[in-house]
Image 1 (cartoon, helix red, strand yellow):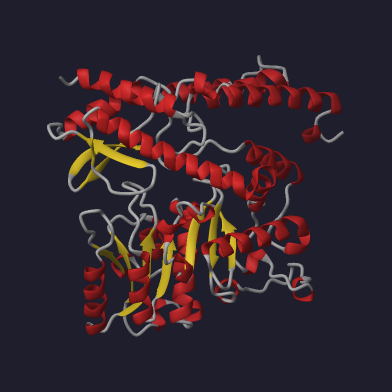
Image 2 (cartoon, rainbow, N blue to C red):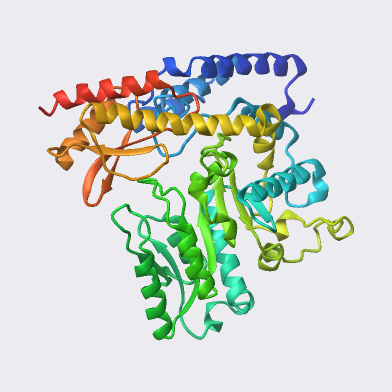
Length: 469
């Protein structure tokens, strides 16, 4: 018997115990506290005490670990978590992770797991079609940050082929990309990691709705061209992290086309609406994008770490990332397949597409559509409930993201209200500045969130208001 395998009876007992823990948690999530007590030193001692030899049975050990996960973390699977795009994972995703962890597919070379390779290939193609792209290629990745870095690298390759071999020193001037001040900071991080530096990122001002100011963008591009710089990319956002703004995709794409710039849409959150015919129009123009980021682990409820990069340029990923290694399998050229390791940033990685594919098998495209529409309905309901209690909605988005305050509340008042709600352990919200005024922020991230949770949040806000009266 191999030590790490354990014996058959032990495995059976452990799996049964683990299944009971998971089932109880998933069934009764709403009965748990949303937020923990933040005492890191206590948690550190808990971790150290887990190594104690007094915990002899495997059941005790796994119960101890699960208690740690339940007790010392924000429960983002809770329907009263109104947070930062972190979902309650679909049960299908949990099953796919169990299967993936057991069989441990290696996704560097397609021939090591043709099934998982074909699953990801199919999923990318189908998502691309629903975005309206005429030609589709892409890759699964760890999340929006990796997808956005992939976009920057592809854009650099498209405009400056020498960059891949000679680096930025081969360029005649500074390359420049454009995004709004509300764009996710992963774009700036990508510029730093790609070697072009933060000064290559132009943060274009936003309008009153916190959308990229297209006229200002146009002037900025022209100014940089006049100065002899090298514009190469524009990033529009569909669903900014704070207020949920959706940039004017069609107008920005027209500017990108005019100046022959790579047009990327960071639709990490709102991109899921490509699966909802009722709400897909908020993404109008995205079908003309050169590349798109969409996070399956956000609105589509896959377990964390499931991002997706999709492009309308079928050869750009391979030309950007191809590299040869003598020890890697070479069956790809014989089967019209491209090994993932020559097609993406990562080399060895787990199967991520199975999380999406399993949900598609369980619920179908109609299931995704129904769930997305429910999120949107709950967002509208929350806005109405808040208005009925004299809260003012400060952001302007069709998405289920609500930034709200009252005229007489100071930033300190908003912080105190947020703290009261979070410390109640009954819900989790955050704060976000809207036009230099701090607001409370609540986002419908959980497909299990219903009007009961919305009503409870409004009551918690009323209780919190009394503390500052």
